[in-house]
Length: 209
Image 1: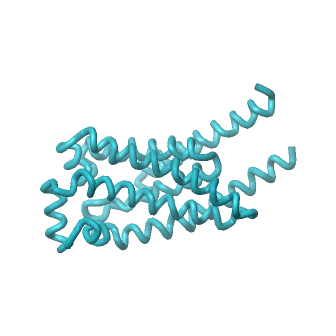
Image 2 (image 1 turned 30 degrees about the horizontal axis):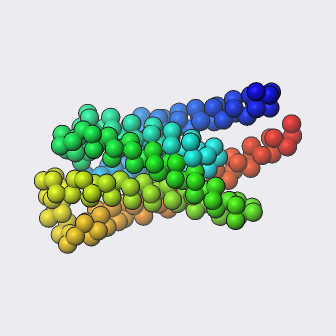
Image 3 (image 1 turned 90 degrees about the horizontal axis):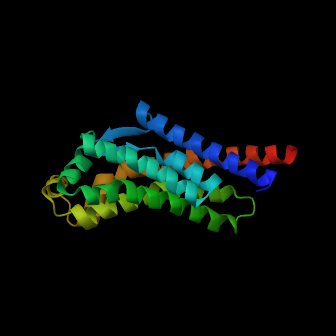
């Protein structure tokens, strides 16, 4: 590898490590999540969105997996009532729910940004749309898997009855509606703004070399 390639690889690894540290810090300090009933309103998609935009789908997948492992820990320990109930029903499907869906979400955000940036010469809109997709896909994949695998379990059916849901889609809307909207707005504004600022700074640094 050339000196330039080594420098780029080191830069990539340093930024990835930084985003992982931010993800873990937000989780451990409680800054990245707010309990709302049986669910947790999470802002941990923000560093995933920024990392996926700046470093690509691979980094997005890694950061998504970190988020997922933290969520799995909550499921195992009982910190999350809902996912703990799912873990007691099926550990395998809970791993897919917590880790698999978040890993896929992170990779998809990277792919979406790469596709959008080809048509967005200034890459301004791409930052914000990709960040919005992080929150939307996180909810879509997570709740979609719950409906697909756990919908008929007693825990979910009790929620269905208490919410007065008429069908699975209605259930998801009632359960996630306001929370999902807040997550989406926060991730779009913060994630898009941070990604744009950091990317601009990194490109300016490269030009000065």
